[in-house]
Length: 247
Image (cartoon, rainbow, N blue to C red; front, side):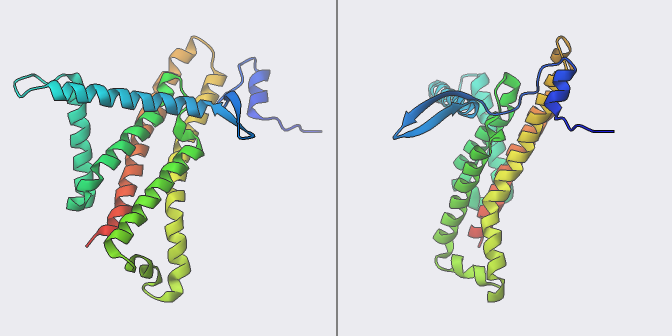
């Protein structure tokens, strides 16, 4: 008796359903300095998320500047105050007084990661399901960690790699290099797994079922998991930075 190995897409097609789609697609390509570059679904999602943040920030700034003490806060002002108070409490709880100068960065990363994670609710492919995005976030965080470490401890920031004994230098070095990898892979893996699961579910189901069951699952994979992963990324960033600047 012979056996044939088939993939999930073939099974879906054999069942008469549409093929599951959770891949990154190219929308356009162009040449630059002899290199072929592609505009992908990740770029489109990043542009949309960035524009949403920029427009919201400009509108919020205008509303707050025009507001007076006698005015009743509007919806936008209440959202801004909620974000600011939430981030302030989170930063103060983890970093203490050292965290004041990091509030803007943490707030930016939290809002950006959160919107990227939940963008699947609006038909976009989450940018954080692309490792190029999460790795860039991890590298930026890595640079901030060590910049503040050098600023606080000078040359001792590097000599600490030889503590408690010089023999542990390779292990300490690997631990530092692993920081951006662990941050980026954790966020990437969780968001990608949700994207793959939703892609498979949409591939298995057909209308009108796709307007019911997937909506419930989006609550977990996009909203709940997206909020948790944005918080975890910011929390670990604060822990790593605080470890370098703590007295």
